[in-house]
Image (cartoon, rainbow, N blue to C red):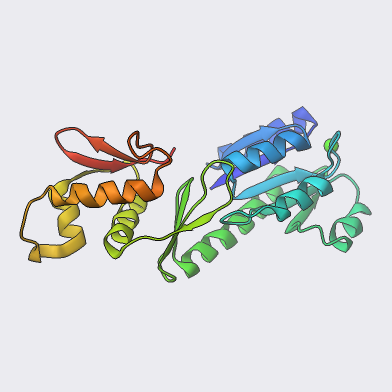
Length: 233
Ligand code: CA
Protein backbone atom coordinates (compact mmCIF):
# COMPACT_ATOMS: atom_id res chain seq x y z
CA UNK A 1 0.00 0.00 0.00
CA UNK A 2 1.48 3.28 -1.17
CA UNK A 3 0.58 6.71 0.18
CA UNK A 4 1.20 10.04 -1.51
CA UNK A 5 1.27 13.14 0.71
CA UNK A 6 0.62 16.45 -1.06
CA UNK A 7 1.15 19.40 1.26
CA UNK A 8 2.93 22.66 0.50
CA UNK A 9 3.76 23.35 4.14
CA UNK A 10 6.90 21.29 4.35
CA UNK A 11 6.90 20.94 8.14
CA UNK A 12 3.39 19.55 8.15
CA UNK A 13 4.22 17.23 5.27
CA UNK A 14 7.24 15.95 7.19
CA UNK A 15 5.17 15.31 10.33
CA UNK A 16 2.55 13.38 8.39
CA UNK A 17 5.23 11.34 6.66
CA UNK A 18 6.94 10.58 9.94
CA UNK A 19 3.72 9.43 11.62
CA UNK A 20 2.74 7.17 8.75
CA UNK A 21 6.18 5.71 8.21
CA UNK A 22 6.41 4.98 11.93
CA UNK A 23 3.30 2.86 11.41
CA UNK A 24 4.96 1.00 8.57
CA UNK A 25 3.31 2.77 5.63
CA UNK A 26 5.34 3.59 2.56
CA UNK A 27 5.02 7.29 1.71
CA UNK A 28 6.06 9.74 -0.92
CA UNK A 29 5.82 13.49 -0.41
CA UNK A 30 5.38 16.40 -2.79
CA UNK A 31 4.56 20.06 -2.29
CA UNK A 32 2.43 21.16 -5.23
CA UNK A 33 -0.41 20.02 -7.42
CA UNK A 34 1.50 19.47 -10.65
CA UNK A 35 4.02 17.17 -8.96
CA UNK A 36 1.11 15.33 -7.36
CA UNK A 37 -0.40 14.56 -10.78
CA UNK A 38 2.94 13.44 -12.16
CA UNK A 39 3.69 11.12 -9.23
CA UNK A 40 0.15 9.81 -9.36
CA UNK A 41 0.55 8.71 -13.00
CA UNK A 42 3.90 7.11 -12.28
CA UNK A 43 3.19 5.31 -9.02
CA UNK A 44 -0.57 4.97 -8.78
CA UNK A 45 -0.66 5.22 -4.98
CA UNK A 46 -3.51 3.60 -3.05
CA UNK A 47 -4.16 6.65 -0.93
CA UNK A 48 -3.54 10.36 -1.43
CA UNK A 49 -3.47 12.81 1.45
CA UNK A 50 -4.22 16.02 -0.36
CA UNK A 51 -4.04 19.51 1.07
CA UNK A 52 -6.85 21.73 -0.19
CA UNK A 53 -4.76 24.89 -0.40
CA UNK A 54 -1.84 24.42 -2.69
CA UNK A 55 0.00 26.89 -4.91
CA UNK A 56 -0.86 27.00 -8.64
CA UNK A 57 -3.10 23.94 -8.81
CA UNK A 58 -5.24 23.59 -5.69
CA UNK A 59 -6.38 20.37 -4.03
CA UNK A 60 -9.86 20.42 -5.59
CA UNK A 61 -8.40 20.71 -9.09
CA UNK A 62 -5.88 17.93 -8.41
CA UNK A 63 -8.66 15.73 -7.06
CA UNK A 64 -10.84 16.38 -10.10
CA UNK A 65 -8.03 15.60 -12.53
CA UNK A 66 -7.14 12.38 -10.73
CA UNK A 67 -10.75 11.25 -10.84
CA UNK A 68 -10.83 11.82 -14.60
CA UNK A 69 -7.91 9.50 -15.22
CA UNK A 70 -8.45 5.92 -16.19
CA UNK A 71 -6.53 3.78 -13.75
CA UNK A 72 -6.76 0.17 -12.69
CA UNK A 73 -7.76 1.23 -9.18
CA UNK A 74 -9.05 4.59 -8.08
CA UNK A 75 -7.05 5.82 -5.14
CA UNK A 76 -8.66 6.92 -1.91
CA UNK A 77 -8.35 10.65 -1.41
CA UNK A 78 -8.20 12.17 2.05
CA UNK A 79 -8.50 15.94 1.79
CA UNK A 80 -6.80 18.20 4.33
CA UNK A 81 -8.29 21.57 5.06
CA UNK A 82 -7.45 24.22 7.60
CA UNK A 83 -10.92 25.57 8.22
CA UNK A 84 -14.19 23.91 9.06
CA UNK A 85 -16.28 25.92 6.62
CA UNK A 86 -14.37 24.55 3.68
CA UNK A 87 -15.80 21.12 4.36
CA UNK A 88 -19.07 22.22 2.78
CA UNK A 89 -17.12 23.11 -0.32
CA UNK A 90 -15.31 19.79 -0.39
CA UNK A 91 -18.43 17.74 0.03
CA UNK A 92 -20.85 20.05 -1.77
CA UNK A 93 -18.85 20.09 -4.96
CA UNK A 94 -18.69 16.31 -4.97
CA UNK A 95 -15.03 16.50 -5.79
CA UNK A 96 -14.45 12.83 -5.40
CA UNK A 97 -12.67 13.05 -2.03
CA UNK A 98 -13.42 10.03 0.16
CA UNK A 99 -12.78 11.69 3.48
CA UNK A 100 -11.53 14.99 4.85
CA UNK A 101 -9.57 16.12 7.83
CA UNK A 102 -9.38 19.52 9.47
CA UNK A 103 -5.98 20.94 10.44
CA UNK A 104 -4.45 21.36 12.93
CA UNK A 105 -4.65 17.64 13.30
CA UNK A 106 -3.72 15.01 15.79
CA UNK A 107 -1.24 12.66 14.14
CA UNK A 108 -2.79 9.71 15.90
CA UNK A 109 -6.23 10.51 14.53
CA UNK A 110 -4.90 11.04 11.04
CA UNK A 111 -3.19 7.64 11.15
CA UNK A 112 -6.49 6.12 12.28
CA UNK A 113 -8.28 7.66 9.28
CA UNK A 114 -5.61 6.38 6.94
CA UNK A 115 -5.87 2.91 8.41
CA UNK A 116 -9.64 2.92 8.00
CA UNK A 117 -9.40 3.91 4.34
CA UNK A 118 -6.71 1.37 3.57
CA UNK A 119 -8.67 -1.37 5.33
CA UNK A 120 -11.50 -0.58 2.96
CA UNK A 121 -9.08 -0.93 0.10
CA UNK A 122 -7.86 -4.32 1.33
CA UNK A 123 -11.43 -5.55 1.70
CA UNK A 124 -12.17 -4.45 -1.86
CA UNK A 125 -9.12 -6.32 -3.12
CA UNK A 126 -10.13 -9.44 -1.22
CA UNK A 127 -13.67 -9.31 -2.44
CA UNK A 128 -12.83 -9.04 -6.07
CA UNK A 129 -9.82 -11.35 -5.78
CA UNK A 130 -7.41 -9.00 -7.37
CA UNK A 131 -3.70 -9.58 -7.80
CA UNK A 132 -1.78 -6.40 -8.40
CA UNK A 133 1.69 -5.29 -9.25
CA UNK A 134 2.82 -1.92 -10.50
CA UNK A 135 2.03 -2.67 -14.14
CA UNK A 136 -0.47 -5.55 -14.02
CA UNK A 137 -3.75 -6.48 -12.41
CA UNK A 138 -5.35 -9.91 -12.52
CA UNK A 139 -8.97 -10.33 -11.62
CA UNK A 140 -9.22 -14.00 -10.70
CA UNK A 141 -13.00 -13.98 -10.64
CA UNK A 142 -13.41 -12.33 -14.00
CA UNK A 143 -10.43 -14.25 -15.35
CA UNK A 144 -8.86 -11.20 -16.93
CA UNK A 145 -5.47 -9.54 -16.90
CA UNK A 146 -4.94 -5.87 -17.50
CA UNK A 147 -1.75 -4.03 -18.11
CA UNK A 148 -1.10 -0.44 -17.03
CA UNK A 149 2.30 0.47 -18.30
CA UNK A 150 3.86 3.76 -17.24
CA UNK A 151 1.62 6.58 -18.39
CA UNK A 152 -0.53 4.54 -20.76
CA UNK A 153 -4.17 3.88 -19.92
CA UNK A 154 -4.90 0.31 -18.80
CA UNK A 155 -5.62 -2.29 -21.45
CA UNK A 156 -6.90 -5.84 -21.19
CA UNK A 157 -4.60 -8.61 -22.36
CA UNK A 158 -5.86 -11.50 -24.43
CA UNK A 159 -4.08 -14.51 -22.90
CA UNK A 160 -4.39 -18.24 -23.47
CA UNK A 161 -5.19 -20.37 -20.43
CA UNK A 162 -1.53 -21.38 -19.97
CA UNK A 163 -0.42 -17.78 -20.25
CA UNK A 164 -3.07 -16.76 -17.74
CA UNK A 165 -1.84 -19.42 -15.30
CA UNK A 166 1.74 -18.25 -15.77
CA UNK A 167 0.82 -14.62 -15.10
CA UNK A 168 -1.14 -15.64 -11.99
CA UNK A 169 1.86 -17.54 -10.63
CA UNK A 170 4.17 -14.67 -11.44
CA UNK A 171 1.98 -12.02 -9.83
CA UNK A 172 1.49 -14.14 -6.73
CA UNK A 173 5.25 -14.48 -6.28
CA UNK A 174 7.11 -11.49 -7.72
CA UNK A 175 10.88 -11.99 -7.62
CA UNK A 176 10.67 -15.75 -7.08
CA UNK A 177 12.92 -17.84 -9.31
CA UNK A 178 11.08 -20.71 -10.99
CA UNK A 179 12.70 -23.78 -12.46
CA UNK A 180 11.12 -24.97 -15.69
CA UNK A 181 9.95 -28.19 -14.00
CA UNK A 182 8.20 -26.22 -11.27
CA UNK A 183 6.34 -24.11 -13.79
CA UNK A 184 5.30 -27.19 -15.74
CA UNK A 185 4.01 -28.88 -12.61
CA UNK A 186 1.99 -25.80 -11.67
CA UNK A 187 0.57 -25.48 -15.17
CA UNK A 188 -0.17 -29.05 -16.13
CA UNK A 189 0.31 -31.09 -12.95
CA UNK A 190 1.90 -34.53 -12.95
CA UNK A 191 0.28 -35.52 -16.22
CA UNK A 192 2.88 -33.76 -18.27
CA UNK A 193 5.18 -35.84 -20.45
CA UNK A 194 7.70 -34.20 -22.70
CA UNK A 195 10.50 -31.74 -22.90
CA UNK A 196 10.84 -29.18 -20.14
CA UNK A 197 11.84 -26.67 -22.79
CA UNK A 198 8.24 -26.53 -23.94
CA UNK A 199 7.74 -23.94 -21.24
CA UNK A 200 10.09 -21.62 -23.17
CA UNK A 201 7.57 -21.44 -26.01
CA UNK A 202 4.83 -20.37 -23.63
CA UNK A 203 7.10 -17.80 -22.02
CA UNK A 204 8.02 -16.44 -25.45
CA UNK A 205 4.34 -16.05 -26.38
CA UNK A 206 3.57 -14.41 -23.06
CA UNK A 207 6.45 -11.99 -23.50
CA UNK A 208 5.11 -10.95 -26.89
CA UNK A 209 1.85 -9.99 -25.21
CA UNK A 210 3.13 -8.24 -22.10
CA UNK A 211 6.60 -6.92 -22.83
CA UNK A 212 7.13 -3.56 -24.57
CA UNK A 213 10.34 -5.11 -26.04
CA UNK A 214 10.01 -8.91 -25.97
CA UNK A 215 13.67 -9.44 -26.86
CA UNK A 216 14.70 -7.31 -23.88
CA UNK A 217 12.21 -8.47 -21.26
CA UNK A 218 11.46 -6.09 -18.45
CA UNK A 219 9.03 -8.33 -16.56
CA UNK A 220 9.66 -12.01 -17.30
CA UNK A 221 13.39 -12.42 -16.89
CA UNK A 222 15.48 -15.45 -17.82
CA UNK A 223 17.56 -16.80 -14.94
CA UNK A 224 20.46 -18.48 -16.69
CA UNK A 225 20.84 -22.13 -15.82
CA UNK A 226 17.62 -22.17 -13.79
CA UNK A 227 14.49 -20.83 -15.41
CA UNK A 228 12.50 -17.64 -15.05
CA UNK A 229 11.40 -14.97 -12.67
CA UNK A 230 8.88 -12.15 -12.80
CA UNK A 231 9.79 -8.65 -11.70
CA UNK A 232 7.78 -5.46 -11.81
CA UNK A 233 9.58 -2.62 -10.12
CA1 CA B 1 -1.56 24.46 2.11
